[in-house]
Structure formats: structure tokens, C-alpha cells
Length: 110
Length: 117
Image (cartoon, rainbow over all chains, first blue to last red; front, side, top):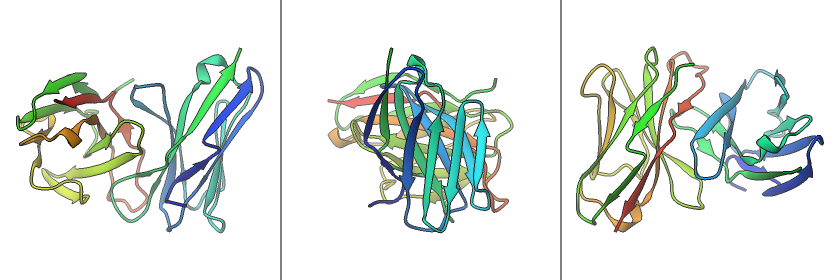
């Protein structure tokens, strides 16, 4: 898989349920960032987790990072219809530019 | 809350024409970036800019591309002679710093959709 590869590619859940998305990467990183993108719109920064951190919370978001497995997960609790979007992980290694995955398209059914 | 802004939101141009995409990064940020997203594909890094010069560029950022910070607030991407395959969403981003070794969040603008006909 390529750097910053998310799974599943698509996820459909009922409103109120929790949504979990995973990201795997190949090379060493300084940090990993999660972004949300509504259809055809810009990228909204959600959360950054550094390589020496294992878990981070922000509101209904919980991100974990396992550098030994080169993987991260994003958990959205108590999902809402407004959470419908594509979610991307992006890694930052020794270079300036973020490396993005293909994203998980999340649909919250009302 | 401060945000990155971009103009125009949509630009249509003919093949071979020059285009300039404009961005206003967040005011206290020091690092600026351009990314692009071809429809249905991943977001790709083009270039980073720090201290009035290019810090890093990807292999996509060839001689037809250039960046400039013409004044204290604007950051521009110029595509000298557009090709059909340049059609994409172009995102500007900025971050507080990038030199500390730990790096900071990159905040993205809403994007400029470039259509080359």
C-alpha cells in the first residue's frame, strides 16, 4: 500500500453510531494529520498527532498512532449527518510536504 | 478564527495561457505551500516556500510553475503555459513553522478549481 493509505474506502453508518477509519503508512514520520473534505470543497484540519504521541482527543474525535505498526486510526463518536465527508490522513516525514492517502468516504445515514 | 483565503474560486483558461492563482496565508504563519488535487485522485504536494524562497518542490513542480510572495500578505502560484492535464483543484496552505523539527499543522484554503480547455 502507498504512504497514507486509508481503509475502508467507504463507510456508511447510522447517525449516533461511532465511525472508525484507519490509515497505514510506510516510512518514518514526524507527525500524522487528519483532514476532512466535504464534496468539492477545501480541506479542514482536524487533528495532528506527533510521532511520540499515542493518542489524542479533540471533541468527538479520537486519534491513535502506533508507530511500530505504522498505522493510525480516527474515531468519530456519536456521529451526526454533518460528519458526512471524506476523511484523509496525511503524513509528514523529513520533507515539507504532506503525503495524503486516498481517503475514506463517510456517509452518515439519518 | 484566522483562515487561508484563495482567489479566484474557479478559473477557466485556454491551453497555453498563463494563470496566476492567489492565496493569502494566515498572517503569523511562516511556511506556505501549494498542493493540487486532480479530480478523483489524491492531494499532491507541489512546493513549499519559506523566508522568500522555495524550500522544497516535488517532481510535479517543473519549469512551467513558479511561486512568489509579491508583498507581505499574498502568495501566488503561476502556471506559465497551461496544459489540459493541469486541470485540478489547487490548494494553498500555511503553517506556523516547519523548522523546529516537529512541524506544525498545515491549514488549507478552500481551493481554486482550474479548468484548462
